[in-house]
Image (tube, rainbow, N blue to C red; front, side, top):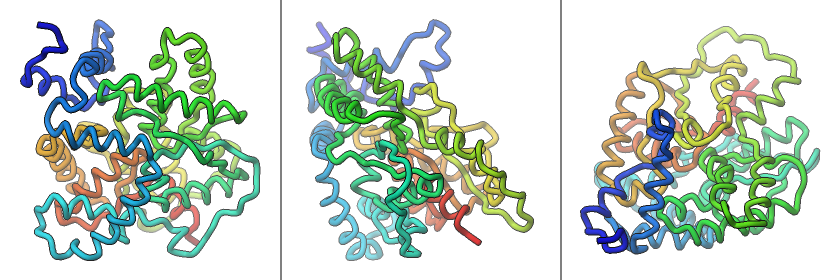
Length: 365
């Protein structure tokens, strides 16, 4: 029996992986486990596996990411109408929580600020979720970079990075998104700032995605060489700035969640801890056993909601024991997972993108 004729049990086993890259990172034989799993998934039906139809619809929505604008509007309306009326353990309530007025709200919007459209232009890839679902994250990125002398240039027709399609084994769908992004990004020069960690990791994966694709592989390599992750870019800027003095008094207790795709799937050096420490306003908390996966895994939380929630809830419980005031990350998917997890735990701990938190810390008097 070939893979194309695989049993439902076999398909289910291959779907029950987050593709976080942790096993590949420590494999003594240097086996790229994620690549092998995705290759197997490529032989399955597009509707295969648990909740296959829901995953298929989610991928199709990402083919036209501007449609997420409508989802944001519906989510905001649904949260206002139903949020307080739904049972505490309702899955719908947890999903609507990420659209509440308190979720991912930036200081720029609260104060009515807007970043000036001046300064050196910098090409920007923010990712679909922050661009269309949580635009407050965009405001904070613009504000931070404007203060460093940059004006972010957000190309109008960027596609989804393609991570969800790739993870499902849909190579043609992933390459379709990749070709679109390559065409748009290569029309500019200089660095390409990526403010979503998972998008950054997958964009950097483009040369492998287009391996043996001739000219497209060469074009992918050129674009990948220009990518710079947000925390790394901000750290480079801080090297040339006057260091802020250490502040006395109580500091904000912050838990930084390092996204798996950045920890295991990218050569980028995560600089979030350094940036938070340099503000002089943060006490960065650490779990005794180090960083852990939040269980979101792109569309893994759609395919295996119970398993995803169990991973999430244990992490939330352990982090809440540290008594944080804020949880931050640079992956939009991780931020949504944290918002749901903290809501499920009945916690009012704030969830913010790293750019939003840094904006808050640098603009307070």
